[in-house]
Length: 153
Image 1 (spheres, rainbow, N blue to C red):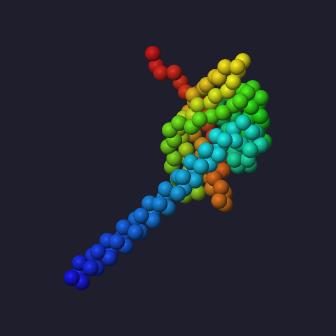
Image 2: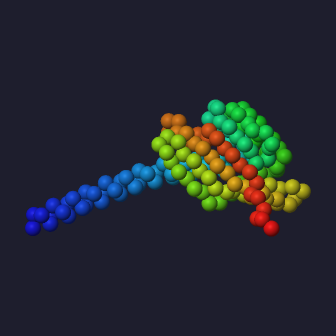
């Protein structure tokens, strides 16, 4: 009876530790997903969206043939996008988030939308965000985005 009681206690202890470990691993992914969602909400405001990038961030934007380096250049990119694309928004699609300690990568797709001449336009694109944890915030250090290619004919 004592042996089976010990086995039950050991099994419950292991299950509790595994449950806590699983939750601890899921939490950073949820935090990175929240940081990406914050980016989608801030995209039309150049000051807000650029505050989500590190000081030395690199951006290869969907709408630009030029790579941008530094928070000021990132802000300028989004200011130009907001000016060129009235009512600029983005909706996230599937995301693949991987966390490596204080660094994380979120790859997936999103769809941009804006209004031109009273008509809503869309542009599906793919992205990769690389984040680094800075205190309690995940900051974007590298962001690549490009239009979704057409399927081969």
